[in-house]
Length: 323
Ligand SMILES: C[S@@+](CC[C@H](N)C(=O)[O-])C[C@H]1O[C@@H](n2cnc3c(N)ncnc32)[C@H](O)[C@@H]1O
Image (cartoon, rainbow, N blue to C red; front, side, top):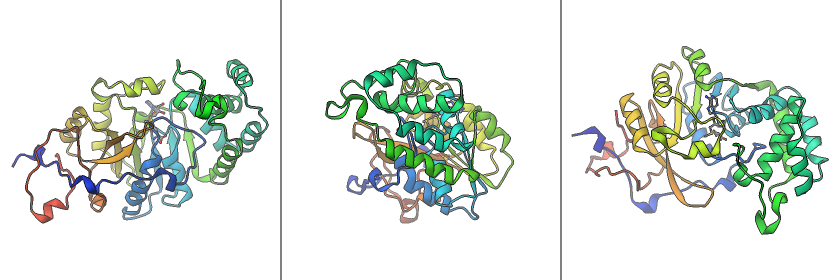
């Protein structure tokens, strides 16, 4: 039996998309490609570890929901967040080094309107915390929260409210102050994800949640959304194959990604999510052993052209094994 045909799926009626409204929103960012929808799975994965991991490493941290959730819910001892984008990094640097209250107050005292926001965004910044504030402004005022250069301000926004559509100062201040309460267990470094993965390669007490920009196979989504989008995906997969600690990766459900997973002997499983336009899509979870996902509803996979095979009951319980 050819392994690549073992792409399992159940009836479409089983398909369930996580209702993100049921997941606590902890990040101060509205992040393109954010993984709030993945939080219920994240909990299952971390709880399935033999011992509580010492460190969760989030090498492509972005909005950081995975690190925040893991630390707040004590699923790990601590988290290490890595991000290359200078604007995003400024927020994490500010809030993990004692500037959370300053940032929260700056947000609360800002009079949001199109004119003030436009002026603020072009002002040069002299400190990390000022840059952090500017990043939060841009993230709230730009279309889709996109911070990549070239992204523009919301003109109409929700109900014609323009830049006010996504400006919730009290909520933002509360989330930022909450991060401050946990900052002794949160570390941030502005570095290249791949270097840090390599640094912790031989440490069995760490786990990695890896969510790179989706650019494998020349896909464009990641290029439009992030200033840093170039990743050597093959090298990333190769590093993962050498990790002592457990890891999971999330990726777009593309043939190039499945081919890499297969090459390195990993398992892959499509899981449903909704994009910002509420279209139902699937993304791939990739790992060494996805046994912890056995009870998660399977999903009809539209993109892949794999044959369905009649499999025995035991096999049906299995996730896709494309090794
Ligand atoms: C898909 S997003 C991560 C989203 C994140 N998981 C969340 O829930 O918000 C990928 C992130 O990786 C960052 N990035 C890209 N290349 C990187 C690199 N070499 N090292 C560290 N971060 C990088 C991008 O700036 C972007 O924020």
